[in-house]
Image (tube, rainbow, N blue to C red; front, side, top):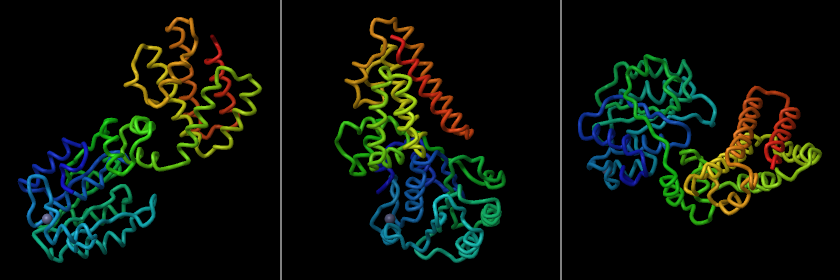
Length: 339
Ligand SMILES: [Zn+2]
């Protein structure tokens, strides 16, 4: 795999190719949210830096360095990540894998590359890394991935060049899903849009049965919103949220997307702009408030959207679950039963 086979991220790839063709720096920071492909791109850059016969498209893929890299045993490459997700990289591992290894010369070529999950470095780990970054041997290149540069010490940042990764377009995400063997099905376009430009999230959602089930149930709930009595909302409606308590933020995301889609429709937008593309016939037929001026419809939808936003804020502030959800349910019912 070379740069051209990585979908999207044109600017970032151009900068990396330019670095390869010139004199690469000693430290790069790959910046972007989770699921954007930071590690994928940084690994490809590492492979190209180590390749014995690189081209303008990156690594050759066939030299011994590339083959060892692909097999995960290239001795000139070190990937430092936490043993468990959400945990930190212990400072001893930074010392062992980097500080002590750094002055052993490369075995295959002219370089050694250290790829580090920067979000997992605490201050102690960063300080340990800093010593190596300050005076690296000429063959060493450090690649750090981070969600946000603010997580790193200014002394680290000042020694790195940033490569910022952009969110993918829905078309690019669809292409990435196909690349990952996720094909067909009307939900493809939905995943591509719902993931908000994050390819990793789109893949996770497309591969999980829980999400598909939860979405179908949330769609059923949404379809009934305008026809439910207060009592039904506070009993069945609440039970639905309570049964999925740990996933309420995802349910709010799904409801958000539906309300936004109906706002698009009420504003005269077309199917290209909606997230729930596979629900287009339903969205069109469920246009709320038949005969009511579009302006009024938009007003109610905007209120429903605000209610979802406020519930999300309440959840993050740990406001008591039952009153929070009951309040949301009654507000949603109000905004969908005005016609
Ligand atoms: Zn090669």
